[in-house]
Length: 282
Image (cartoon, helix red, strand yellow):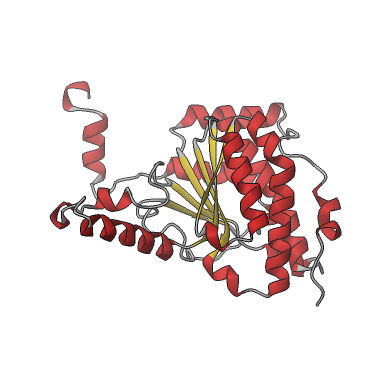
């Protein structure tokens, strides 16, 4: 199979990010979500189902990935409008390096194309791009484009958009342990002082809160080696919708479900009620 050239699918990427999809009804739905209950500060999404979506439509797998870009645009815009502080998208896993070379090449070209063209849009929208994962494994052209956009948007503070690239949860924990071991060896950390909080400080997500809401599309009931440490208390939302069909409407459904759940963190419902409404206020 011949390598897929960027020009073969660039025409499918004409709409720009933040060519707003917001209308009066959407504004009403957002206002309801904001008013009804606390929003998650950090949402993480396992964007799954591009290949199956394409197969159902008689298209190639890369067509599915291209279609998935539109979902990314819509979800990023909606999160920004809602005031979500962090959005992490599982874009390319460590295990994805096992895929056919032609698909990997096409994915990397697609990534370069999208980030190159939309970096200014991200910046103008006050969104900061951040990358977690084994960045050194990415092709040089990809790294260059990402580094330029990270530098351009580094002072933005409306939304942090994390792309998990060449990432796995096991890698993240292993690299944190390695860095911590070096500091113990250097005498910077005493072994008895290693705590859960200290380990978390060595993870790639050390500067951000753990995701309160973890969404997986395509109906698979697993987290596929994604944010294993960070998702210890994440509310998990599974939808059968394939990623190319996932839009802000589905995002709102996930947030509503999150808002309806009682997050106990090992405590009882009665304990939470007592904390929320002390005896002298009930």
